[in-house]
Image (spheres, rainbow, N blue to C red):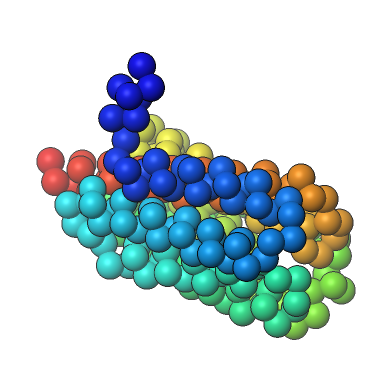
Length: 225
C-alpha cells in the first residue's frame, strides 16, 4: 500500500514534503545554520519539481521562487535590517506572482477585485496599526507587502466568484494561506513570539507554495488545451 502511494509522487515532491516536515520540527530549536539549509532546500525542490512537470517553464515563476527563498532565509533572523531586506525580497516575489496571475486571468473585474482586496487588507492593516512603532524602517516594506497580498487576494476572490473552477479554487486557497501566514509573521516578529506558531508558519508556508505550484501546472495545462 505504501509503495503504491509513494509511486504516485515524484521523488522531488516527496523530498519537498519531507523537507517541510523536518523544517517544521527544526524551527522549534535553535539550530539556525541547519534551518538556513533546509529553507534553501524547500523551494529548491519545488523549483526542480516545477521544471520537471511544467510544459511552459515560466521564467517569472522561477524568479519568484528565488526571491521567496531569499526572504525565507532572511526571516530566520529577528534583526530589523534582515527583516527589512527580507520584506523587500518578498515584495518582489509577490509582485511576480501577481504578474503571473494577471497574465493567466482572461478578464479582470475591477469592482470585484477591489471588494475582494478589502477582505484581505482590513485584518492585515489591523495588525500593522496594532504595533506599528516596532517596525521602524521596515514599516514601508510591511505596508507595501500587505497591499500586494490584498491585490492578489482581490484577484483570487474575483476569479473564484466570476469563474468557479478547480484552478481558481487553488488560487484562492493559496492566497488565503499566504494572508494567514502574513498574520502569523507579524505576530511572531513584531508582537508576541509563540514557539509553536513557528512550526505552524512553516506548514502553512509549504502548503501555500505547493498549492500555488499546482495552480501553475493546471493553468498551463488548460492553456495548452
